[in-house]
Length: 83
Image (cartoon, rainbow, N blue to C red; front, side):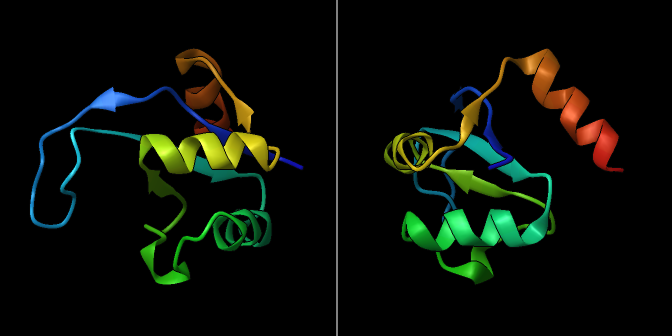
């Protein structure tokens, strides 16, 4: 599987995101991204073009389902290669 998550980051809470932290989940292919999103209980409509924002719990579930944890530099390189 080629689905990846970055580190949790503090973020500003809003009406759309009522949490104090978030991370991103991306994949090499949109079908893989949507498949793992469905598996961990995300609605496909929550996809933001090429990624999902995850809470701490959803990040844990994604890793348990096979998502690969990447450091910042690796994660950014994956994003750049997909463009």
